[in-house]
Length: 615
Image (cartoon, rainbow, N blue to C red; front, side, top):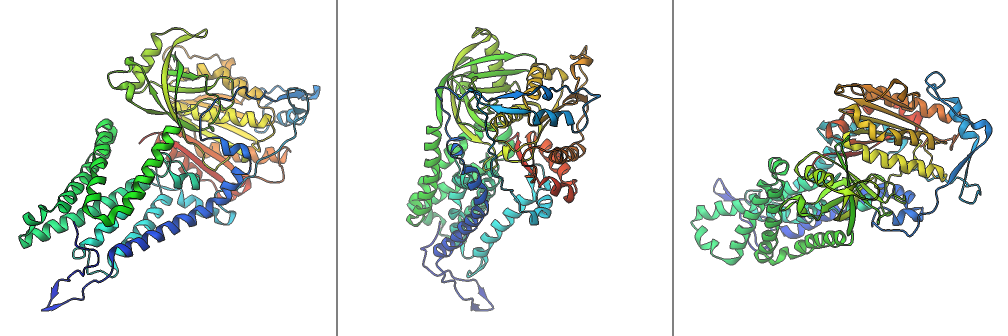
């Protein structure tokens, strides 16, 4: 609902005299503001460019993390040859905070390929997220001011809204008089709403951020659109009603479409609140689809001058769905129940490459057993296997809701498939998505993984990938630590052999695993006292003291560097990767903030990667 673009907007009378009228072209003014927003985004991209170039320096990184695929035969894994002096046995009595026998074992080991030829190390480049001079700012910026919401995100929103406040207050007779200005500001942000809602986010790809980490911008830009559209539309409705022109105006096709667009915007807003997103997701999704299906045609016929913004928004939407189609695969999977963990294991042997540790796929199970509409539901799950491994793509789906419970029951009713209980089923996989972006886990001096519950799938995939890269001589990591919090200690039973295997396989990098359980075991404790003979694998009741454990991780990393080993002249930082509920991620951020700046500098800085549950 608006007047012609170049018309003057009368100002309200004051003391019998008219105020100067605004003659500024609102569309041109807002367009230049959008250019400034693009310039800010380009500046941020330039700041992240060195990190992107460091990752893409290796050609293999260009083809990893984008398309799921099958490679005919993965290259054979390197092996480690030990000399007689490299024998290693660490008990609780012999194993200190930094075992000298572990360092000795690494010194007396060498990597060889399948033919017995030695493998020469080639460490990846490392570019820190924050320059050393700016590290003091890292702690305040990562402070949580709300669950899952950092001060850095708050500052981004402050800059964004400040840029938009400028055109509402400059060269205008006022927001309640110059109603066209509010409409132009709102509709000019519609492409950003679509962009930040896309799973294949172009800006996110450039700066190395996943679509989940940018979703706060989608929600904020959407609120800008909603407020601007209501200020514009309701302002004209009020103005026409006062002048007795509403019925005459609303009969015109342009204003009928404007009213339809305003209704669609408010429909989308009402059903996108947290109440509907969490409790009635299908209603939220269907109203989003219906609302935007009404909004774009209505805007198109409301004013032809809006067409460029509609083109850009639809371009982002079309690109996202085109890439989704390219990333979608239909395969036959094997589903197996794991009753001890309350988890359904899904194996897709036909896919064995194309993803990075920490990435996830969206899964759809094509079976009537999932319910009347359950076969059409798509759910995200982290990939639990390493790209290039013989087992293919593996998902671990925890039984936590109606859909996942039906999947678990479906797997239990199967027969025997490939020497195990399970059944075959057709699945649709879309992805991979998310992941570490431009960060390379194997470029840090230490990697600490903090997992809560089913977040262990992310940690295990990353740890296995780090060990595989270490055996090939491609990892700087000296220390890998896992801190896993579960409710029941029995959850460790299925993973106990794997944990021990990881500790044994990692010759050049020390692996430490600590499991904490928060609920008393029912019946007999599932492990004997002899089940944890070394400090490399521990289990304890209660919750971990994260601040103390992270401090100890820094000390161990520094000592391992002093004892000799990889790239001993330079520390390349400690990565803390978190996968679990938002509360866990906030707790880790709080613990890191307690570390003294000097301690962070000793290890080359502490950086955080978060994969938080929730929507």
